[in-house]
Image (cartoon, rainbow, N blue to C red; front, side, top):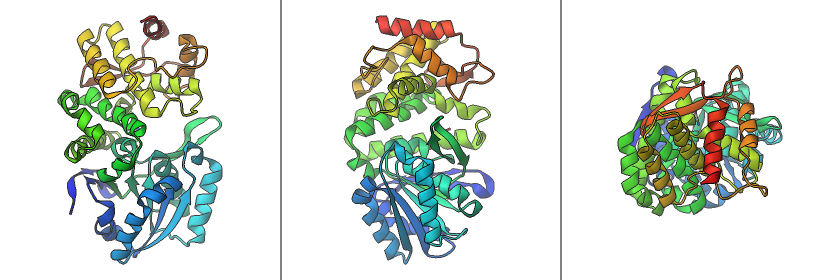
Length: 372
Ligand code: GLY
């Protein structure tokens, strides 16, 4: 077997393994088979991943005597819609997928989210296995049971917590990922070091380039270490009433930047997160919490790796406007009783949730960034 390592998310009967390694799609029958009530699954994927990886997965399932009913959705964020959810549920029902059958989500965050949500609602809850094919999904989206779709009121506003039965992360599939997407996913890897593991961040400073260029050992280690941190956080706070919010380090800034650009592809989520990580450190530094040297390290590493480190170059035609960004933050779903939520840092690897950041300080950071 090609397993590098695995980590168990301990949620009692709903616990599951996150398995990381190479060539795992080609041996999927061995991992998936023991979890099935009968040798039959539905595989949901998108048109891009279908071309690259579906045959490898279905061949492995067939070798294990597992029948696969395949459903292919259009690629892209627009797929996370009510219309596509309805079509997907229709197809699953047409295929007579029963409540004890298992649905495999083969793809990035979009496929994982909509398939997980369909599984959560199909026959009031059907098992799902996540087979993430992007770095971002392997280190974040596929783990922890958040599922959902976007609506005209905002992203991920309709959904459910529905934990998978297994997360199967084959780092080999990252070889076919466009470099820009790989880098965007890497921002979430850096996030783990910054929020809770200074040694991991130091390791990334030394080895991050190998993770990007395709070194299997480096990718295995980065994905498993990130998965382990996500597992620990979700285990302690499945429904995000406390520590799970730490996973939003950099995200209040990131969502404001993405909203301002209208999610039109100029700025990928991970690129916005990279920018947000730097801004979160700058904000913490402004509040006297973190040393300038720590902020400088974060900025340096993201720049070296090729990610935005500060307000992104991809800006609206009229340039970034701090007041408009602040307006978006006020609409953020993390706003509670009118107070903005920020994850602040005391050092690299030491983050906490704060609800008492003043708008003046947020504007101060953005204005300083624009002037730099
Ligand atoms: N992606 C953030 C979370 O799973 O909580």
